[in-house]
Image (cartoon, rainbow, N blue to C red):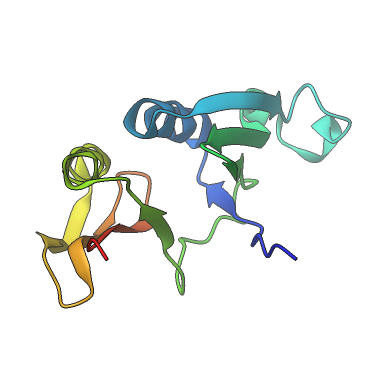
Length: 138
């Protein structure tokens, strides 16, 4: 059995920019993008929302991150969760933390803890909360 939580991030109209940013920062690959205007739901969205993202899929390793732009007046900032990113080694952890924190807010600087070689908490420039973690060697 494999548990894989469905992670779909909602954005305020900046999903495409966020996913391009994550693609660069995390070494991922955008596998699919569908705009509101190109979907069967085009008439449900305002005309100016046609170029915004209805569904996007970003592969990072063997995991996928999904995202979409919420319709105007329906967006709510994320709360009550964080995307946990387990980096491979200390230098990769530091690189990713630095990249994701660009124009964001660091809540806990990247540091050694009793459970991790490196651990830090930030909210990126798109309002998404992240916890970056690098395990101590066993």
